[in-house]
Amino acid sequence: MKRRTGLLFSSAVVLGLAGGAVGGFLIQRSRPATPLPPIQRTPAVAAVPGLADPHDPKTDDSAKLDGDLRSLLLATPAGAKDTTDFMARDWFTIESLAEYYAQPQNALVKLNSYTFRRAARTAWTLTDGTEVEVDLVQFRSTEGASSYFTMTRFPEDATAPNVPGTATGYVGQYYAPDGSGRYTAYGLVRHGDVVAQVFMSRAKIAPSEDQVMQVTKSEADLL
Image (cartoon, rainbow, N blue to C red; front, side):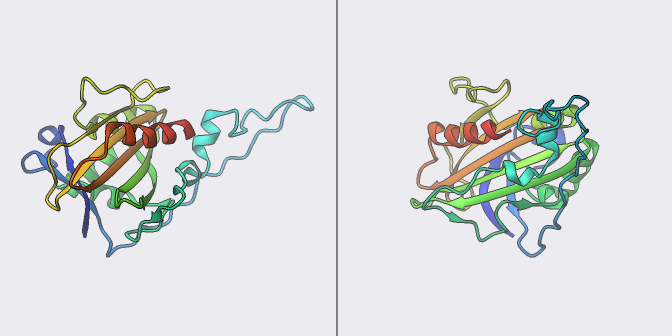
């Protein structure tokens, strides 16, 4: 396994995920993710000729989130390099998501109880060495997504602004390095039954709130 970023889980005591304050945000490279097909939806035929399809992803939010979740991930920015840890803009399994936590078995139980449905992720490295990962985690209900949002709740900085255009989104950063000497910033947004989580890390100094806000806001705009 390769540690990509260090993650501090404020909910660790409740979930029993971490021994102490720091949980591990881990990638299991030895076990490739099992591809999960998108949920197919058959559009209803319009009752009136010329009437817009009510299940058009451009106009129907549910249809958009029921389509190929990978298409809602941010594109790799110009000049950045896709991660080599896993296939960018691809599915990943509930087991792989559970491996992000210090106690994967406990996390797996929680994810199942929240009715985990599927997840997709992408990641890239900027020219200055900043690593960025964006995950979309979908559940079978808004309630499940809300529970996961709370489970993964990172420390909120009261002075940090909310992500514009969202009711729940926020960003933050850690001022101490993780075990590999990298500093981490993060963003979290829930939209319906999908939770988007953003991680940015680099050596010497944490990415600024403005930097992680830009990525988080851009991802939220796609949902």
